[in-house]
Image (cartoon, rainbow, N blue to C red; front, side, top):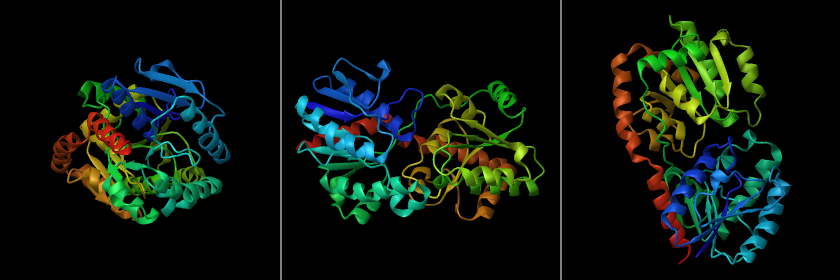
Length: 374
């Protein structure tokens, strides 16, 4: 069987949520199924690290897909050509984009449809593209995979597709995340926050992630608490970041906020391990990988009570309404003042995170592949 895969998000040093999903699942699937051939389709020069096994054939076809017009060109003209050339039995697309110009069965992984509910968070043309084409992709797909039951129901309801056509394949967790020693924590805090404890946010700087709300909540927390804790924000800039930095400039305690930008996986391991707590309060999320990463690192979590997040957090996190700044602030105060609560959340987090693994994600995605070929 020949499985062609959209691997355009396997970018060295630039893996985001969907990129990690692509990397972790494909690495396992290609190793587990040497009897099949995988055609990895890149839109720019690739790193040899991503050619996982001998049954992977890498193919580069341009142009690099950096714009909605180029998305249309790449998926509707370049992809069909490659599918035909290699006589593909299936096209697997881990970022959900599909081709409207092929009869080859297609499996799209639609992680979430935040753009339906929050189009204003995106540049105008991207929002238009997503809302016009993704309903079409959902209908032409032989099968769809998604990363939570919330997203499954949302896709079914919003795009009017059969509920049974969609398979849930939860995201996994990178095994690198684990508790670190007190000496290591002291070292990391010395490097990052002048030796002070810190709250942590991990994610792209994007309106949907509610970084503005987090900054306001942290400012309020500092105003009422007698603490020298800081806030560390890890992530690269994406769309419409102006309000984030405007909010930052207007903060009373902005000297206690540290922006690291994008960091390596090794550095992220250290930053997670040394954190006092993760504060992850997006307005909308398809899964929320940082929640599970924090749990694995032995770090308590404050997170949103919306969309898919309660599915991931279970009873192991402290919830807050992301639109209510006072609730986020109160959660930060509570977790700072109640050592027993913090200890309880850490213990529950170790139990909850066992529900998620990339091995299981890859197994379930392969089951979806097999269904798409029936």
